Length: 500
Image (tube, rainbow, N blue to C red; front, side, top):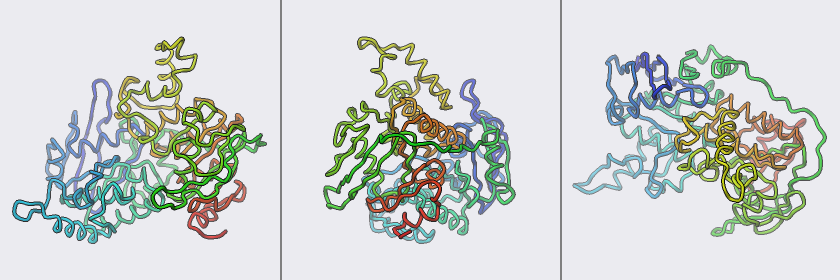
């Protein structure tokens, strides 16, 4: 046994985050830890990495009880952690990021060439294709993920903890990462994988431990379980299917006509004569590999970036190149694809994040004076409805897990009850229970006669929720399907640039 956690308990006042948890890791094993947001997964691993101190219990590494006081202690024991939110210096090169704090020297000076050579050799050894001289901030997210893994490998880690490593990756990047994990194990490493994506658990792990409300509900051999059993252990009940009932669509809500957008520096076409409509009572899904114009389309519709040509109309009103406020006031709500960049103010509290754009409504203010009691009740009720786990509504948003922040943003935007909702990656980083709930909310909105534009990198999500599906490739609409003749195979062909 490479390491064991025995009876680990972590309390924060009266709140118990981890309750007498037992966990073990074998050599050259991938052991997945799954559970809903707030189940205690990350807290448990932060204790193994020395970022938190257990209230009780013991950590045993290679047969010896260890007192891990800090990440330095963990690293000395060969334990490294790749955090959910990358900890890179964007202006530094990849090599500079990897060797930081362990820089090779030539005399008393930093040896840049040796650093680049060492990082290139390390990457090649583990089958990772990177350029050590590339600026980290310019690298795609999938490459940045590899840099984080290379950092812990450079420190000599034999145990690698990965906290939700695929939360921000595209399907192709996920596939590459999982292949890298298998290569790491083949080369002698052992991996703890924190995730909520059961398909990834089934594909790459050897064992899986399920947490619910801070307790272990099961540890199973992956070969002897299935996603349905794991789901039930995670949420404590059987998940319900969300059927999409047939219904007549109404009049046009969103009309996008021949919009074009190009890169200012390269003149490359980012959107090329994109045209489509969304009607009352329907969900239109957009599928595509990340980087094929989806982000630019979102920004064009919501006013976050100017369009060069064409029009965006909402309920007949031309909103092309209008301000974000003008577009929102016209009846648009928006779950953004990046919850940190566009969706939240991390340092503000949950009240301020929940009330963005709503504080001026008559329910919440009179003559410019905020109705604080009504606001606090609304926020508390919303967080309860969407099961956002937080210590207090006065807490800063930066202390929420990524999944809980996503649920807060979804709650804020869905509850605006606008005629049109643009839902971009609405369930990115959330657990299966929350995913089920958010899907149900989107379907209810559609069933109530509103219009939803769903943009998601999860094909299963697009197929499950959409009445019609559009595929984007290189800034164009490459094809359209209704839900009855769409399939993952047909969509994938168009997403890769093929013909269907």
